[in-house]
Image (cartoon, rainbow, N blue to C red):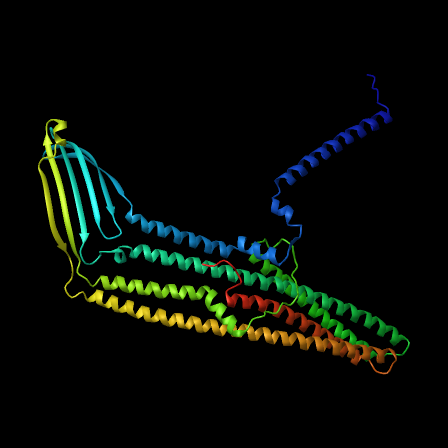
Length: 483
């Protein structure tokens, strides 16, 4: 048998074609797989690499609209509002179907009808119940009407609307609580955002200080080589540099923690990088302490809540006093019943019965009602004391915030003067060190004092700005919406 072997060039060419086809198939597969991964990625995963920037107004708006605790409080307000509608449903027209299917000693029973009832806000109750059907071999129809009116206890809107008024007070309380939660969210957001700004500025100050110390250490090494500086100078500068590096690491950790806290308030995922900006201008409030207290007493939600609680205590005392009266009701009834073998005859108004009478079920001593009334009177006194305490607490808080602003303002002035002195001391120490008139101890000490003064000024300025917002919260003007 004759065997023909292909040429080596032809074999290598075909092998390259096979490898090229495999590479093309692998490329197509990778492209399709990459497109599928990109299409299936979540929007939050793609957006997590982009930095979200917030200024002060944007951060406050974001917190008011997306803060989780605030949204949860909003659902509580909505539930209280629904409770008001539920309590008012007691005065709606009630329509209930009536039906009977069965067998008794009269034979088969098959009846149907409606029960209509209505309760009024003055205590009056009415009902009408027509019912028709077949009982045994006859057709039977009945119309029953009832009227019940309290004569003493339960007559009037005070007692009848007790449940509705309670639910309305709970709804107003929930709304005010929600408003206070919004105020707290705004203040927490301002504090957290300025804390991020504080830590960011502090990191920048420490980083510049570390850079300056590194240059100073390099300069000392050169001086040591030529015999101008000693080893002790180099040790002293290097120790200071290590301390600054440790402070810088702590400041960066504080920056991350402050940013994480702000993300939590803004309902932003923790993995999402953010950037913030806020003004550092100082706008001192132009208001006397007497004027500030007057504004706070007029605007604070806690005052309106305490006044409303006093009114609610008085209303409940009126209800308790009404319960001391005897429970005597005037009851009137009408029943028309007829049976016939012909369906049409049962609708004739015959065999009607009228009833009018008095009914009552009052315990003679009414000891529990008297104790409840006394308790409600004590609640009035407690609510009055609570209102007085709230007013005094607001006065104290306003004066405290004004004093805190004055102290922060004095701190700012003091730190600015210290920075000016520290800069002069630093320039003089550097001049002496360059001319070999002193060692670097004075330079390192002056740098430390200058760094401390700048950090203290930063803290004082931010404390003052946050203090202005705290004062606005104490005045009740942090949020303009009133309840």
